[in-house]
Image 1 (cartoon, helix red, strand yellow):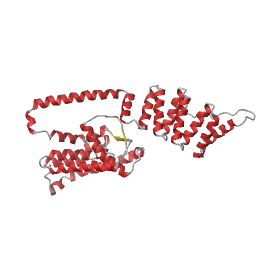
Image 2: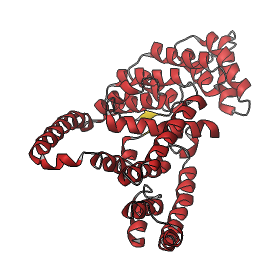
Image 3: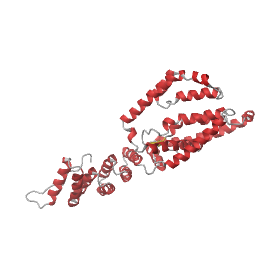
Image 4: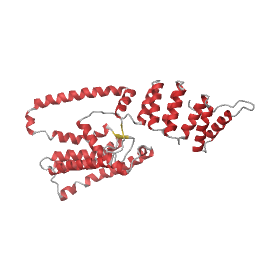
Length: 367
């Protein structure tokens, strides 16, 4: 068991709660009648698994922090707790009614009020299952399995920019299946043929729905475009869609998604640079100017965008207009020699020529 637990954690840290899940199995096997020494005797065999799980908790948090995955979402501790609690309702709903599925669900702010309401509901269900543990032991087991197995994936410790993920429900859903199966009336056992037909029809329906979803996974663009239906205002998703179109050579479509990404997050430099490059590649300088003007309008403190807008305006002959943007870039980042050089060139180009005409700043690298 120890070797199997270690192997599973090396593959993916989904089984961090395995020691607790094994205790649940012990409780169910004895119809929750363990008392005192009997219950204490089950703990030593779980301690090695608990030690391994604790080690992997530390390693996982360290690994996620080392690559910056824990910094992709900025949220206070109360907000994360509220989000984690509400995640339980989200995953429950997904199991009962799997609609609007997506490859990516963005992390959305969650109010403390919503978290308190869901927490009260979870507590009420837990209390009901506990009160029925003798007559319905599988109910308490399945519900607690779902609640405990979901803890590492609920979002209490956020890693990545996703709010939820379908794959996170695989292990917790085992408990819900147990609740469903052991809730069926005993008299249904005599109706095996009816149950077999009903199960076959349900399985066929799920196969059809799965087949429809699988068509989206055959190519990156349809998959990400489908995700946009669920999260139309996620800047990172728009950026990824743009990159997918870029790889297919559809530069104008890519540029429009880069532009949308900059509208949603004017501080996201990759979308600014890639969108700028895409517009330049299709010789749409007006589009490039529009993208950068939108960025500096939403975020006037973006020195990089100010400088790049100045370069673009100067390359179209609007040198006088570029000076103000170069000045803004220098004011925001006075240590940049490149910004100071661009300002000096633009100012020289606007003065009356003494001997030789001055030239506008060179286009930014990567164009």
